[in-house]
Length: 63
Image (tube, rainbow, N blue to C red; front, side, top):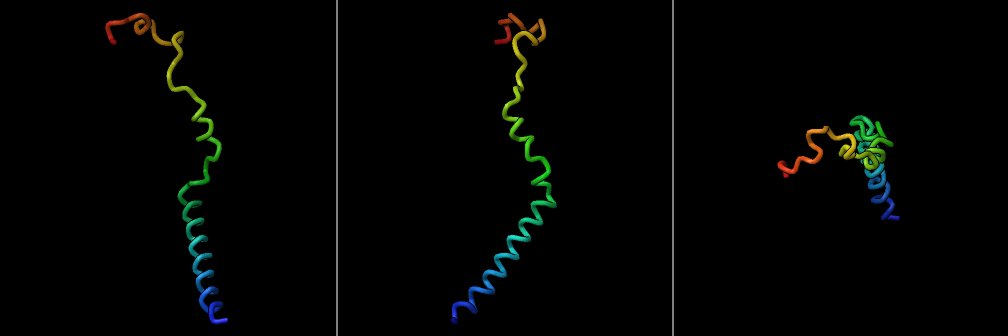
C-alpha cells in the first residue's frame, strides 16, 4: 500500500512529461510532412547522362 503513494505521483509526472514532449513536437513542426522524407530517398539528385549539358559530355580534361 505504501508503494502506491509513490507510484501515483510518479505516473502523473510521467504523463505530464509525455504531454509536454508531444505538445513541443507538434508546435515545432515535427508532424508537418510525414510523406516527404520517404519520397526524398527515392529522388535522384544527379542528372542522367542524356540530360547533362553538351559541354560536360566527353570532356575528360575535368577529371
